[in-house]
Amino acid sequence: MHTYHDSLDLVRERSPERPVALVRPDCTAVAGRWFQDNFKGDVLYAVKANPSDWVIKTLWENGVRKFDVASIPEVQLVARTAPGASMAFMHPVKSRAAITEAYFDYGVRTFSLDTHEELTKILEATGGAKDLNLMVRLAVQTEGAAYTLGGKFGVSTQDAPALLLAARRSTEELMGVCFHVGSQCMRPTAYQAAMAQASRALVRAGVFADVVDVGGGFPSVYPGMVPPAMEDYMESIHRGFDEMKVHETTELWCEPGRALVAESTSILCKVELKKGDALYLNDGSYGSLFDAAHAKWPFPVKMIRDGEASTELKPFRFYGPTCDSIDHMPGPFWLPDDVREGDYVEIGMLGAYGTAMNTRFNGYGDTETVGAADAPMASMFGLAKRSISLPRTEEEERKVVRFSRPKGKAGQKRRRR
Ligand SMILES: *Cc1c(COP(=O)(O)O)cnc(C)c1O
Figure 1 (cartoon, rainbow, N blue to C red):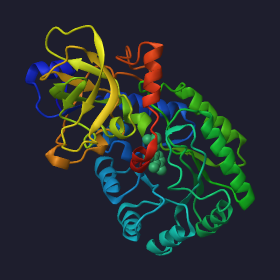
Figure 2: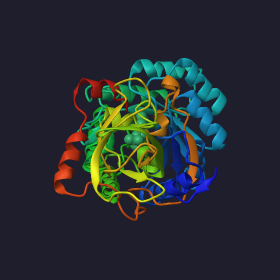
Figure 3: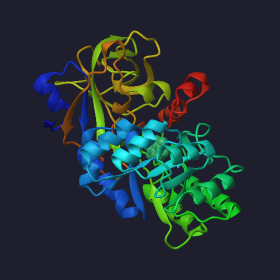
């Protein structure tokens, strides 16, 4: 992978026609080490946030030994890029074939479940294995999250005790509890509250957990969504763990996805047309900008031009390259008012659920990947020198916050984590 100093360096060298992902493995290395240094337990990377080879390799080289996977292709990716890594199959609904293949061909021993039916499926598909680590996924409150994951997965408080007891009786190895407080969780205490809920379910079931897995949800920084410090999340979890009724050997796990990769990647797009306040770009909602379209997140932007530009900023909205009218990113994205066809726009903070969402719809989605040596546009780990085009006035801040809360049917239907 060729590394450029920054996006301007790339534009000067060869004005790219396709969208380019500028990746910064150092950012992911720092985030991975930060979690290992500050989280008092095992860190599993949730592969779906960004399944690029360089992410898996970087985390492996920086001490991450466990990966949270949700499909056989993800299992194969980790087996290929980080041989020897341990994997946990944390999707609560798996096909029998996937369970069998993961267990017998890839040595996966940890599986999650949220129903008695899935427990039976796991036991049958592994030939009645006795060496399974069974993780019961609990439904917990997800109000603090920008992306709730409630509804689809998790056993209810009422049904949890019976399932915990059944899982406990089904294995001679570890029985654990897991949950997900929702992605981009803005409230550190959500973890402590979820752990208290898990503790009550365990007490009612009359069983001890060997593992408490607090899942993902750790936030990154986006315009209008600046979370509390990551230390506050660690404190809430460690306090929650101290308050739980567990034994001395109980393990604590977490599964960050977004927090380890969000900062690492920006996308360099080309402006194909300007029509009033709308810029038509060569990347969009079917490419790396899913969240900018469907959750209406106003990602930070920079105009890249090899030459002078206006210092006056104006709010713009973006259209992607496909013929679909929902390929629209409302922003607002603040750019120089003289931005025009042929300029480039670098969109930051797209390392999580950005490049991972790319499709080939309408013949687009052929994104190139190069390295970049500059700082990310914003950072939870002290890596950004300045926050470029994060909102500058209180009035802009209010506008952005309004845009960042997805509401209505379209948003709900398309949410997926
Ligand atoms: C998506 C997912 C994660 C990662 O979530 P982030 O919000 O990206 O940290 C972790 N665990 C499970 C089970 C998930 O589905």
